[in-house]
Length: 367
Image (cartoon, rainbow, N blue to C red):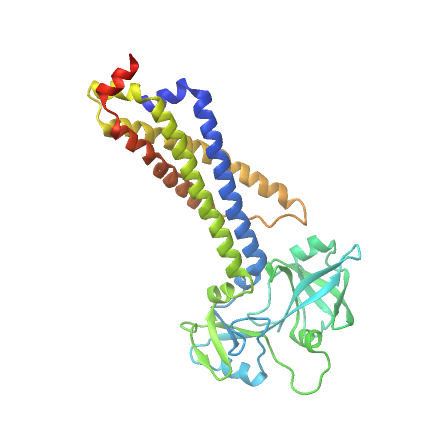
């Protein structure tokens, strides 16, 4: 085709355009990957819960930080219609000392062994009801802290310190931008509330199995699905809005840059377009050559940007304090489709110039 032949003849010029497309593609992929990485830090542990729905206190505003459920309320939730299985879960953030003596924070989740709230252990042992000072640490916790299964870690909360032994390793993700650590629910109660008098809250949330549970309410509780629970994690909504805004801006900039490049190229080729139209080429044929060029350069730019993004993710993953970048197949597919569409939209500027080109005037400009 004429469009591809022109690319071959003008390699340097079209190569620079392909470079711009590559950089724009890479930028969009990195912004998207950053958004996904931040989402994983915000609540990948929540997404890993073995549950269909989650019950919160009706006064918490779907916030696990503010949610506190009494034993009586937990029993009402467990006995709600349609519930086939359940597990009480507690949450508290606490500081710990890593292998270098530095202070860091982790999300401590309290659960009961043998329930759907129990995480899957990938190495080491599971917790038993007698492991009051044992914990299961996520692999991200171990990587960041420099600790390993069998080591002892000092945890501090409410001006008190506790020595825990890492019993096993899990792969549950992060919660509230902290690595997840699982302890017994009785241990969680002691960590969060200490030895204050009166009845202690039994859980922060209750994990539920069953159909059609989301949207139900009862005395002292409300039930939502995991997607709603994740969207209500503090900071997630604003974070997603920021990432989506940056992504949309990058697509718009990409469309404008590609459109301007090809518009300038089209202006330079007005005499040649006039010759083509004079010998019978239709506007559709001429514009089709431009679209072929746009699609070819977009495909080349995307094909180069994708492995660049993957290599960046791999390189950053080698450091425990790296940026939270993550990619999925959907990320690559949607970014590729979005770039192709925006590139074609940008090429419409050139289409307008093709329609305006008069063969007689264009041929006169050649003389």
